Image 1 (cartoon, helix red, strand yellow):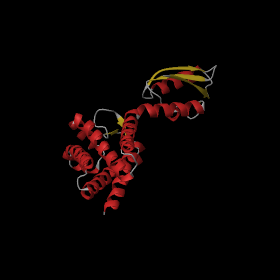
Image 2: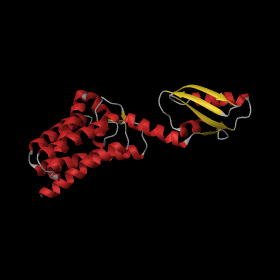
Image 3: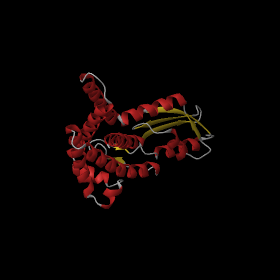
Image 4: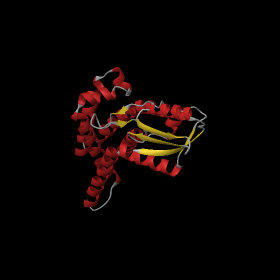
Length: 237
């Protein structure tokens, strides 16, 4: 993709060369054209790059600006493309479980959450088991338990599978929800640490199949499971 930005602060040909060389050093940039006369910089990139990344690469006297509406729209589009797999999975699970409730002739929150949790763990464990070694390696990069014992990544994948089956079959709700609450609470600690420290690492929620960056989406995913399991646990106690 290619974007043209307004660039002020250039006064000579050397400025053009300096700006161009600086922008070309930004990861993901493939081509740069700079014009002192037009006061513009046209940048081609492999994928959308935030304006701040370009500005940080330049001398402070050069000011790069863009149409804010287009910038926000591009960032939104890029976010949707990045997280399309996990968003589709959540939409699929939500739609199917709501359809199951509709076919039952009435909506019961407890029953819906039970079906949602079953589908969630079965689907997410499936992606992890496609390449369990790759998942375990990615998971050990941020999970507090897997960092100490890499075998936990292998155990975790099968734990999700077991929880999915447990929710699906209605096995001992107290045990199932208690295990879910503990496992997901431990899991979210490493996620929170990575996101708050702004570590750019791969999220292992969909195993090694998709290259999803760690973000607030992962926090929401884990928090949702914690909230649902906690609610259902309190309901059956």
